Structures are given as C-alpha cells and as structure tokens.
Image 1 (tube, rainbow, N blue to C red):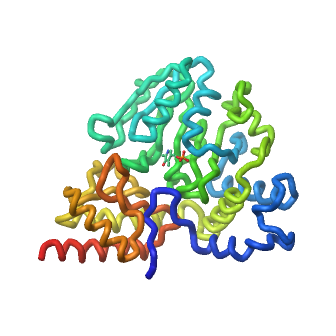
Image 2 (image 1 turned 45 degrees about the vertical axis):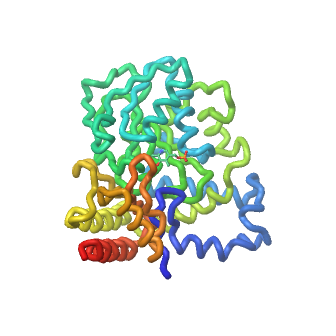
Image 3 (image 1 turned 135 degrees about the vertical axis):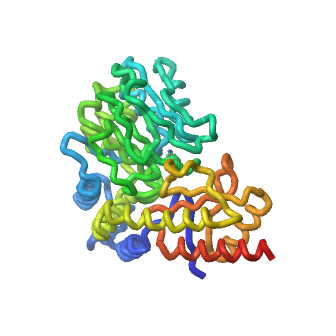
Length: 359
Ligand SMILES: *Cc1c(COP(=O)(O)O)cnc(C)c1O
C-alpha cells in the first residue's frame, strides 16, 4: 500500500533525498564513516555546512548582508532569542494569528523587561483570517514587528508581507519557508524549524540581516552575534540534520527552485480546496483570501464523522490527517515534498466517503 503522509511536522521528505542518504549512509565520500560519525570540525563536514548555506542562499536569493545560521532549539527557542537579541530596550510589536504567534508573544513577555504590543489579531474569529496591518499603526521606533507567515494550525497565510515602514519584520516562517516567493530583503530576520519544509527535526534555520546581529547577549548559546562569528560551529551543530537539509536544497534546485515548486504547491492546494468547496460534506473554515496553500484544515462539522473519516483514510494509507487538537477535524499538510498524486488520491477517497455517507 502506498502511504501518503499528511503530517504537519516532522513531515514527508523527498524520496530521492532519502535514497541518496541511504546510499551514503555507511560510507560518506570514501571516508569509511557515516555523516553522523564525522567530526563537525572535519573538512568533509565543513563542505556539507558550507554547501547547505550556499544552496539555501541560491534558493531564496539571500542578499550578501544577511547571515545564515544553523541552530538548535526549534522555532520555539527563537520565540525567546528574537526578543533577547533584538528588543534592545525598544518596544516590540506582534501580530497574533494563531497558536504559534501566541506562544511567541508569551515567550517575549516572559522575559519581563521586554515591552510587547499586539498590533493586530484575528483571535476574535478563531484565527480564520489574516488581519490587515496598516503602516500608520506601526510605531516607527519599535525594534521589530513579528509575524507568522504561515499558520500551520489555523491554516492561514500572509499572501504578501505588509508594509510597516522602516521597522524590521521578523518572521516565523517554519511552515512555508521555500514554499512562497517572499523577498528576503522585506525581512529583518526569518526563522524556521527544519522539520516542515527543510529536513529532519533538530535544526533551526535563522536568516538575519547583519545590522540586527546586535552587540551580543549574556548567554553564549542564545547570542546571534556569537553564533554568526563562529559560522554556527560554536558548539556541535545538528550535523546529520544539516546534511539532509543540504540534500533537500539540492533536490529543490534541481526541480527548478522556489518558483517551480510554488507552482506545484499552488496546483496541489487548488485541487484540494476545489474538492472541499464543491463537497456537500466537507468544508474549510478559512476566509478565502487568507487561505494557506501549505496546511489545509477541513471537517464534516460532526466530530464523530470526522473520526470515522480519519480512521477509514488511515486504513487506505492516508496518514496523519487528524487536525490539531485545538481545531479538531482534519488537516492536510501539503509541503514541497508531498506528491500531487497523494492529493488526487485523497480527493478520490473523500468523494467515495461522501457517497458512502449519503447511502
Ligand atoms: C511547528 C511550528 C513551530 C514550532 O516549531 P518547533 O521547531 O517545534 O519549536 C513554530 N512556529 C510555526 C509556524 C510552526 O509551524
């Protein structure tokens, strides 16, 4: 049975990447060792981390004045590192669009000495739309405006990055990095946990404009400046995750890069949304102009029927369709590595299920 993994993360990886990793598993470039066994100071690993950065720069067209960091601690540690490094006794502004931005806000507040203002929120309609942000709302003396480009749980995404004047935009891009055509220069800092669209868990990518690196903070591991000065090798980085990320970047470049995958991603999402919108049984709760192409929640409106659907789908190889516990229903995550055939097969299965319900 073909398995289609709709997980929100850790998520599906390109089969080609896994096959390549398998072929190099026991003997990486005639070293007689696996990548996992290489010293992070060896020339073989140095080449891996440098190539990973180079390929990511190519894919996202990252300008020269931005540094790329390969860190640990997940996107969640960035909720703390961002205000710790960037707030600099200035006010910080947050856009509240779901569970993850709420956590980012709470983490900034927990630092105690950071002033946090929520400038826009879609909490009142259970995060079913992306709120509008006007430049006039933005205090131009703020350290940054934080937003979540794609809301993995709610199923919304910023279609374009709001103009906030000269205040740097900090983006949690965990679930749609490399799956959109945002311009890096529209951001002061971008961060993303790798386990959605980049590679295995354990790696967090940070892309930060040089002038925002700051003067250093008291805690070495939490200091962007120190991490940048050490080329992400201050301590042992997640070497194998970086290696797989490098393979994913190479895979994506070979496919034609972000614009090519974005076209595929849009096609996949359009197919599923059309099917949901056409269906008399399933529906998607999100305002149409705010819909994510990456994470698509849907439900029958009946928890028991949703449960039966998820169970029946699983038996057919459609795995991890259960929605986030805070939303319920189903959620299909269609990351870059998720094949179009899987979407087509799911739609077919949804139709059959709907027909069987009508009988
Ligand atoms: C998954 C996710 C996170 C949490 O990532 P961790 O790496 O588990 O800390 C944060 N933000 C967004 C948008 C996510 O999708």
